[in-house]
Image (cartoon, rainbow, N blue to C red; front, side, top):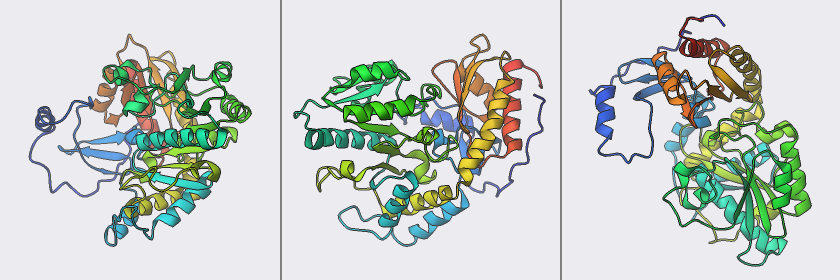
Length: 422
């Protein structure tokens, strides 16, 4: 790989409202007043456009993280911003105590996009997971006939579904779990990508199998071909639900609308979030079969902001972008460029890599540095990424990235790993 010139990034308007404090000053100002639940890289972003962000000093960076897939369509996509502005001038919130004129179109569009029947609108990804757990248990008692209080849900080791107390109850990440007990019972964990172990864990009490089609937080772990189809078949035989957490993997990221589409699998429930809000507002949803989501009755579950008209307007605009197939095609085509570029770095600081669409996990030789250290060095080269699990970095650029921009980011990675210009 040869060194690439920095792509021409959009100049955009200058920052007229700079806060008057430097990045270092702003970072220090956060220390005494913000809970320390994150360890951000030392950059203070002030504005963004497309795949580029700008810090308070006016330095520009190529965003290769895209808000953990929340920014699949880039920062401030014109169609999404326009939908939000238009709705802000009309109506933002009614609560679900009343109907609003945006929700039906959003639900119809999202159900059609996923090939399922009904939508339960929520706000955050963790809320979608919690909602699916409740629905699966309710379905197990009312439809499958599991004795009350005995429903179990099978999950995969290495999972990441959020950080609520129920969700961390079945996490095996000590950072997310330790110190937050007592934990919620009713979950069984089996190794990811192991159909034999999954089959052995299923019994008459199993309400659902909840998995990520690709494990993002674990380092973009992609299962063997046939695994997802195998999960679908085992759940069908066991008479339980298949719940696919597509909060990071869905909505175009992997080169298909959903990651399960790579194996032509239709789960009973699909969990969506992040990109569903277009990087503008938090929007999530449980999308599923009518006979499964139909177990909910008024008062049994809810959300004041879930399905609000602003969220529904933005969500409908996201669905419209995906209906053309353009972004799925871009992710697939540029994913091949990403795969080729990372393969060329094998033995040059990259010990392993996994790519599906525009999503990659890159394992860095520990002799070169931790994932955090590599992320900080890339920051110095004008590229934003984030580490996970020690020596792994994740690449997940907006699906609007160009080939030149992607190749420039790969050249920057090579420079950081090898200490050369390529």
